[in-house]
Length: 389
Image 1 (cartoon, rainbow, N blue to C red):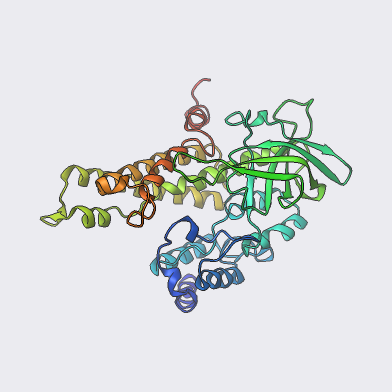
Image 2: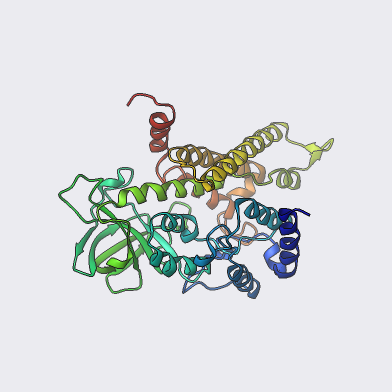
């Protein structure tokens, strides 16, 4: 038996023994997803046990080094772990901006001390992070940000405002872009810093979306304190880190485009004729969508493999984000069509409080968050297709 075959066998046995029954069923919505953090309320004992067991093994972040709370797995072993989790329909034990965005940036740019301080807490789900990037006058033109960090010796005093800060009202810490030099050109006076949200100088205000729900907040800093020991990289050179993190954010957003089975839903709602979905036009649209989604999945897997091998994803992440966004919007359009008039119920137990309609409306933000589709197309045109400005 090869080393990988042995690893698969051991992993399969461990998952069968340790994955609780409830964690082998689909989540019932966002409230049923484990985000971790100091104030997170577990929805069940199984959810808590699953995080503890996977966190202790380092398998919430399987490819991170063991000394930083990870599993120390190779990319081949991580693929096996993922496939064995899919086999038993195991949920992800932890969803986290710390895993998705901050972790990769710290692994690349952080000091050893910063990694030891923050990464294990991310891996175990002890700290929930939010992202302080966009501002009221610095969205697509992010480098125009004006949140100010004033040097006070061993710490900075932060003043300013961020907007569209996802889950800021639930986060424990923030990774934040601040301006430390107002005389330099706008791209070179920016620093990347981490600080605690649970302090007197930080307040948040939720932003309601058309869907009736929203993870987004306005975030205000009034003499908030950020220790210099939590400055990542060099002062005034945070834009490099910001761009690197954005490639991971955009790739993560592109995961929304991964295929989910629509056939079973259509069969259940519409029935079959001669063993096929009764609505011929809808059958064609679902087949076309799932072919596109499968092709995208393979492209995304290849891109992730190249990134793990040390390749620079760069502008390619914009292509993934753009295409994944459109696939996700298309999928929710099809879900509306499959459910017919049932999809328009806004409240009530039958529709899980209008989940279908609200999720469809939520997808409209996909082409804005993480950089608008227009910005992504400009990046693709300039940096991949080498078109003139």
